[in-house]
Image (cartoon, rainbow, N blue to C red; front, side):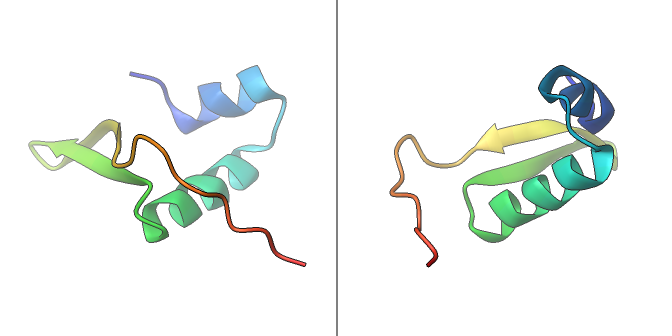
Amino acid sequence: EISQIEIARKLNLTPANVSRSIKKLCELEIIEKRYLAGKLVGYRLLVEEFEPQIHS
């Protein structure tokens, strides 16, 4: 289990940027949040391979 704050530290990003990125990954159904007894316990990868969308 790793927190968004720890992800931010390891990637040298702000926690806000990590939060936005995780939200976007959930919206794109690339990952999903996993809960246990109503508490967020982690994330699950939903796709093994995906084509990144290139925005111009």
